Image (cartoon, rainbow, N blue to C red; front, side, top):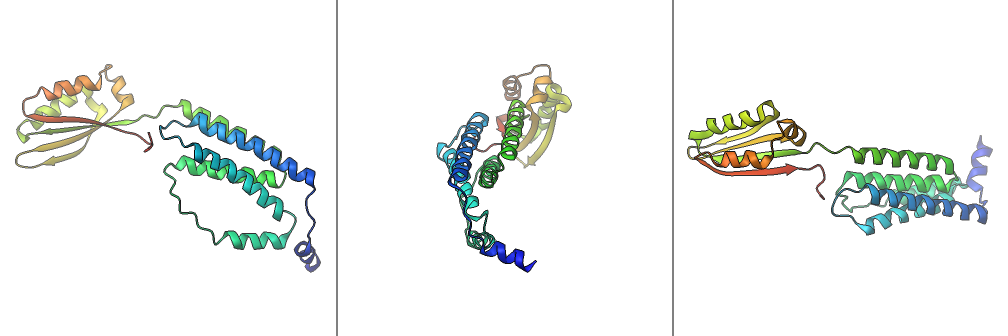
Length: 226
């Protein structure tokens, strides 16, 4: 056991140039695939080309690191200690972007130790998964914010129930002596099923009620960058 540990600690055998070149070539191919996947599946409006390029850099740098430490236990332990003091404080707005960073790191690790088939299969599965999820449209919610006088709040509630029935839910009601503010939540899917009623039609009918001062419609999205 001691001999095995000593042998790995003192092993300074370097990779062949052909292996290093092959690792980096495969890493470049995987990087291109990851960047293309990110561009195709991105659905927001704040697409960052710099971030996409950074994904490629992360994968290639990780490949270089793995190529250096793959055959030397001492270097591996030293690299772990060196990297443990690094702190990245750049805020990532979208959780999905963090997942792509992990994908790039995993690809770099796999290419650095010549596990090409594993990386190819895993990347293909992720690509198919993202394409499927992209086709599934999110059921975004809409908030109907109504400002009125307390005397007509029952009339407003009746109008909402008449048009949307159980499709809508009262999430907040703020009542004072002079004003009444109500917030209703309805999903787009439920709105489409409610006799094909358009939100603009509901707003127009609400605003016609005497005593209603303002009707606002706010759409809740799951992506702050949209």
